[in-house]
Length: 373
Image (cartoon, rainbow, N blue to C red; front, top):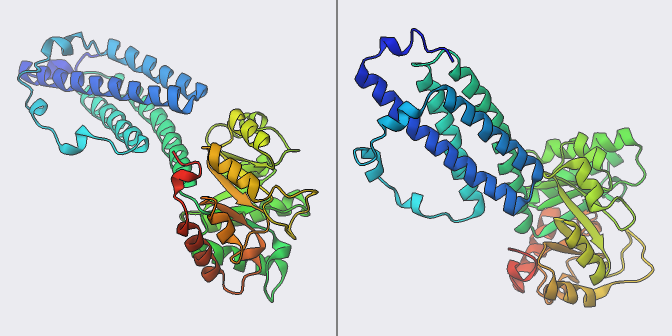
């Protein structure tokens, strides 16, 4: 790395100060990367991102070698560093894994930026190398924070709305009714909206998926696509939901990666256990009551809901014929999450219906009773 014409313009005191800055920033960067790597390795168990972070650490080590940070170590003066005597209460505690990851992502990003700027004073090539590392890390940071945010929002979700255009009430066309119901449901605060269309061709299905993405973007409502990982990817959805006859969780994960949520419909405790073992992010549990939306040979009923509530920690949603008149039976089991379709699609007042459903769920139990960690 060519330093000619750079350090020679600096006084000895200036050069020493620069190397102290580079040393401190390099240490912060290494520490932050290691903290993030352990989160990805042991919490997310994301092999690809572990590789990505290891690769960044390797590239960063090469830059440090080329910057000759041995001089920085020699310039280190920990006892005389005024910054070591200043701490804030917020630095001594973390309220959640997401906060921990966010703080260390900021540490890495800020350190890389500092290194990039100050290395301009002593090197011709290092700043460009550090810039590339910084932008590469920003991509990982975005994925990590979005990924964790999705799962946090999933855990606090209560109302999962399955929307089908033909079922949406209204005086307009199917498309108009679909838009009206979808927009009102999102405004009313449904936590998740799933596009469930069995009769549309692929182009029409993708068109509706993209509309839902447009309407949910910037809101707290997650978007899930039923059965179709390809459509979920193209629409930039938050997840995909599959049944017992569709692709397995492992197969879907190969297609959509770690970022997307994957839900699985389960009709027995054995199926629920298997879905959790395979890595499902959430479960649909039912059918609890008979439904006009989907036919089943046999109802799983309240008994299954009780079994799931007693054992399964992964977030799950009771589903099947649930509405504002029978939701209290679900709530009495301790369930705090439900999936509904016609209860909202056919509602005269969607906002009022969503409010009633949420209040009924809050009446019994807590999120910790239903797969919240």
